[in-house]
Amino acid sequence: MIRLRPGRIATLLTALVALFLLMPLIAVIPVSFTSRRYLSLPDGKYSLRHYRALLEDPAWLDSFLTSVQVGLIASLLAVVLATAFCIGIWMLRPKLSGVMTGFVLLPMVAPPVVSSLTLYFFLTRLSQWNDLIAYDSLGGVILAHMVMIVPYAVVVIMVSLSQLDRRMDLAAQSMGASVARRVFGVILPNVRFGLLGAFFLCFLLSWDEIGVTLFVTSVDTITLPRRMWMGLRDNVDPSIAALSVLLILVVSTVIILRAILLMRREARAK
Amino acid sequence: MRAFLFLICPLLLFLGCSYLLPFLGIMQLSFSDPDPGLAQYRHVLSDPLTLSVIWRTLRICAIVTVVSVIAAYIITLLWVRGRPLVRSLTELCIMIPFWISVLSRAFGWMSMLSNRGLLNTWLKDLGLIDASLQMTRNEFAVVIGMSHYLIPFAVFPLATAIRNVDERVLTAADGMGASRLRIFWQVFLPMTASGIIGATLLVFVFSIGFFVTPALLGGGQSVLIAELIYLWIFQIPQWGMAAAMSVILMIAVGGILVLLMRRYGEVAK
Image (cartoon, rainbow over all chains, first blue to last red):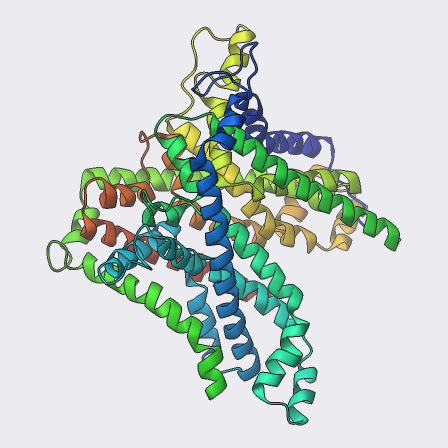
């Protein structure tokens, strides 16, 4: 049991840090209701024009759909590749498994700008050979996102496999099950929540990805973060405030609901 | 053996082709474009403009690391050791910003700090200032934005260390009459040193290759290494220089990561 609780000074300082963390999220709310075309506070006149712009401007809808498409396809492919890899490592425990795992985690630990440059270099070279997976194409963005999110899928699936009882697989093996049967009949059903978690995380990462996307797209394939970037870089567009308010609302609702659910479960457990 | 081919190889092949090979290509460029040999590296490490960018990056990243780790330590303390209600509230304050897009967060700071933003308007309404303070497009805004982004990342290693503190040691210090302040400085803080070092290295590694927040909040006025690489590719094409800088960055980050792993390897033993 904790006997020494943090005192008044610590509580006060924490309140300051918490304020600092929440401040920018609160600051976008008034800006989103301004009636002007530039970043400003509504002086008496509140307007929903920037929210309307989000709905009416087909460019935002286009980018939304592009982001969803890229996110779903990249996450699905990344999870499939990562699942196969992790199961292979878990079942066979090859000699160099440490080295191989380290290698596939590389895009996660390398500085994002180095990965961006690397993928830009790769996709511009590929553009000379084909149009499908090329610079500034849907295929190219999907490939770039896959490279960036696959390490996270590997981490989540590895964790979920490490909690699996090896004796189940051994039992199946000793009763003569083939490798395919062991994978599809024993291992996959037992890690299905891990796979779902990995897919969810991958989608979120792809949905937010901007560093690499900035390097590998220009005018044809514009994801939602990329369009936000364009509106922030040139002259600050208050539509981004409206979009940010919506995104912040979604994230906050999900996190607060999750917290309430967890608290209820704890209370019931007592 | 066939299982190996079908299960492990696809991902290795995929990353080998789309990550490792192109990175080797970048390395080759760094030694050959436009001059063969080490000319690009010599230029990167001697040109005054580039050097000033490197120094600025190191300086800003150091400040950001210190600010983030201290702020994260304070909030983690209450997150782990506070009363249940306080714990839930601090958790929300950590998790909500963590899951919100880096672009929205940078934009939030623009709304807060820009000339017609919230802070300037408040200060003017209160009569504290006459003209707007310039708080964006400078290093101040970059430090604020980057620290805000990195605090949640510092929280996780710190939380592990603070959870692992042995309660009996604190009780013993308390029983022997040490003041609360003394218990914190001489007992609690040293016991969480591994978490502090881990968080420091992690935040520093993350901050050094940072691109989006400095580019938006610095407004071209305080270019960091990552933005310099971007400019070398898209504004004044100098592939060799960009490649050389990337290789240097990769080596620096690799070195810090090896340190980090050794540190945690020791703790694990």
